Picture 1 (cartoon, one colour):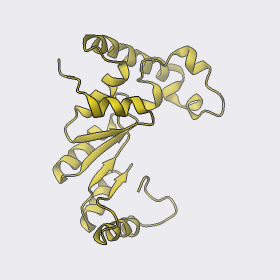
Picture 2: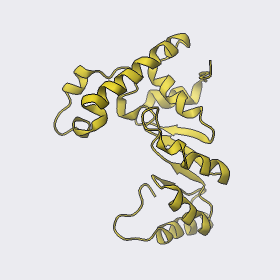
Picture 3: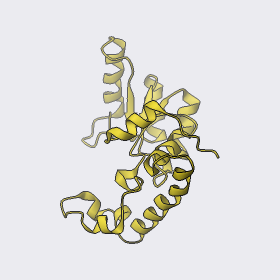
Picture 4: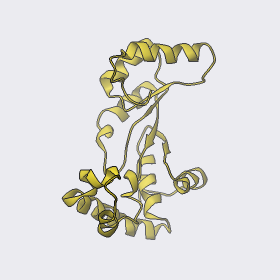
Length: 176
């Protein structure tokens, strides 16, 4: 389930349906996305949460405090999404590029892509450049490696193919 239901459907109902599909052998594993610890606890009481898919990046780190430790303690895999924070941590985003975002692009209205938030996020991406250079990698690869270095994170999901190919085919030490 990608988001907790907003239509009044109880977690117990949609999670129960997913567990039934698993029990029937129609799916191998079931998981949740964008659910907090209280919701994970409620789901776990009904049946094991195999995976959690939260947004997680060097910019958006909030799941590191509660959800990642919960998953590690419960044997729940974590497949993070948006490790490059919708392009901000690719090393290619700039103030100029942000200014060219169309009105129909949600990023043009996001605090992460405007004003002080944008400047702070570009500075963070710039801080990753020396690390990338030292490891002969891209800023995007360092951003992804940062997420994968966290205990309990078992994979990442990205809308762009190069990041997926990088994580599948190589390793980048992030501790040195």
